[in-house]
Length: 199
Image 1 (cartoon, rainbow, N blue to C red):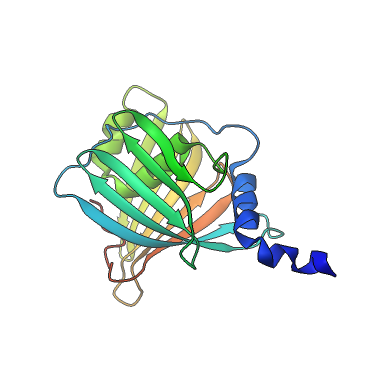
Image 2: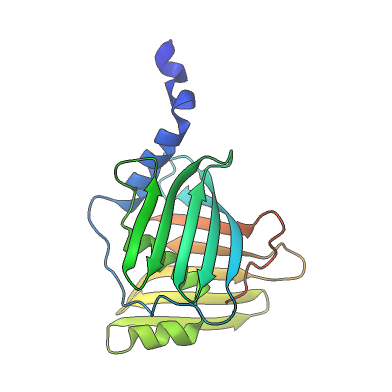
């Protein structure tokens, strides 16, 4: 009987295990990255991440992210919906790394996680410049409902980011990662209404 209640008591650990499974056993291919700094005034974005694996046997999970963009780089705090901090990601001129974590090894490589965030946050021109001379491509298309961004490695579609900014819906992004096998809906929370805006 005790075993039935174990997952509830260890929910954060179960969440981290799920994220580990999302990342898979082998390291995914990495694209060239832009310089770590962000132009303009520093800004903080608050996002709710609803993660749905393609594998229907795995549960949907929700995380909270506070993202700081500045001239020095990217800093992201990831927490559970109850506010428990899971880990902090930093990407600056020293590279991408975790500076705080409740586990010995975070669920996916810091560089990979930073890259996925930047694919949705950076302007198309910055990604094009970073990908220049490689097999990687970025394709942006504008539609009535918003924007569709595709990230390709050669002819292989790695990820698609749909930015929904239609006046009838709450602004949000949908990141579909075909390489890892999940869909993540990214919506603002608190007083942050800047989803769909590229810094």
